[in-house]
Length: 53
Image (cartoon, rainbow, N blue to C red; front, top):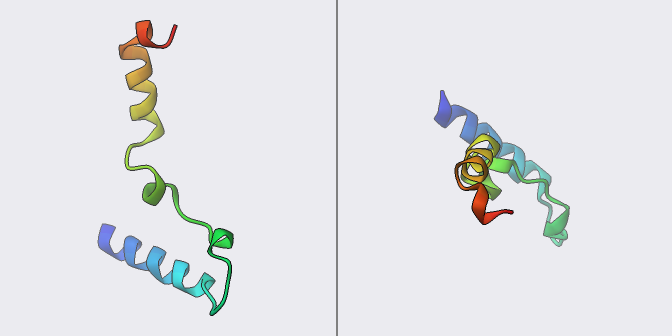
């Protein structure tokens, strides 16, 4: 199921791209831009608060 959802994401991305298009206009899903979830990033913050104060 995960591979099918990734396949549909790739298909959606390709449907947004046109020849000569500015690629900054293409919307990317967050799992492409950030490998970790927001929950994992918050967990890091709360695990080591001395680094952030």
